[in-house]
View (cartoon, rainbow, N blue to C red):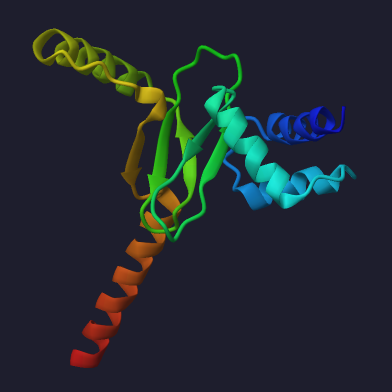
Length: 151
């Protein structure tokens, strides 16, 4: 069946990029690179269906940034999703210290406030190491140029 082949092509493209976040355009490009004939609208519809089915996780941050999609493998590993507020890059973070802290936080929130956390759908905002280094370099250059202009 044609739509099943299209769905399989989209799913294969996502699986090939397991652990990565792709925009719908990137998924469409990945599908096309395999030689499969799947239109962009079909890719969008398939991504929405896969999201509803729990096969794919969708991240939307604001109206200006395209949604990112992540294929959910069968792994039981808890992955924390981090988004750099400077370059907008989305990446995984694996950290036993965060595991320990979130286990304690989850228990507290459930017992004391009746709130159950869904950490797999949560995104931590911060600044990636590349942007931090770039910022420190810019700050350093700015202070150097001010010092030089004073003397």
